[in-house]
Amino acid sequence: MIEKIEFSSEVVEIAQIAKAISHPVRVYILKKLSKMNSCCYSGDLVEELPVGRSTLSQHLKELKFAGLIQGEINPPYIKYCINRSNWDKAKELFSGFLDDRLSFSTKAVQKHPKMASIKLQ
Image (cartoon, rainbow, N blue to C red; front, side):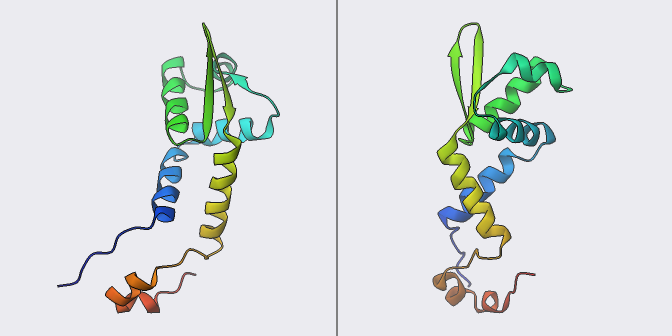
């Protein structure tokens, strides 16, 4: 019986980030915030996006959970910014992934010899 591999922390992180950016609204928010040298209020975002406040709130929650943005609550306003250190880490992870530098561990290849012949295209 073949033993199952364990995913590396890098693979898990890439998957978590990919899930967080899996909606056009979230991609738009990240693009907007990453270009700003300041933060943005959720009220400003809801005015320009084709979603309601509660839907926007859910999208912001997903991005915050993934660590890509951070929020500062100053009732009744919430200000959001890119979490620069996590943003830079996400860019690095995806750069490596998209440049085909993501590699299988030696242990995984030893357990599953067919993996050694897999070539990313």
